[in-house]
Image (cartoon, rainbow, N blue to C red; front, side, top):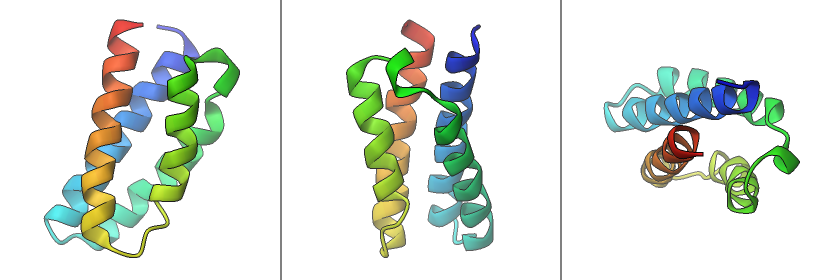
Length: 90
């Protein structure tokens, strides 16, 4: 597995943990994995991935700053699935 796929897989797990953290009422956990997700996004070069993944990375940065936790949890789970499928099938 190359570094880009590893970073995308790790981002998918971070996003899943964010979703679970907010869903289970553990804001501290969700915030910690939000920090990790932001670091992972910085590790991924958008030119090395499919264009739709590059766009999704931009949208995730925006999504992580939403004020409604339920919206963050829902979108984080969706993007987690997108990134996981990309890492497994690319």
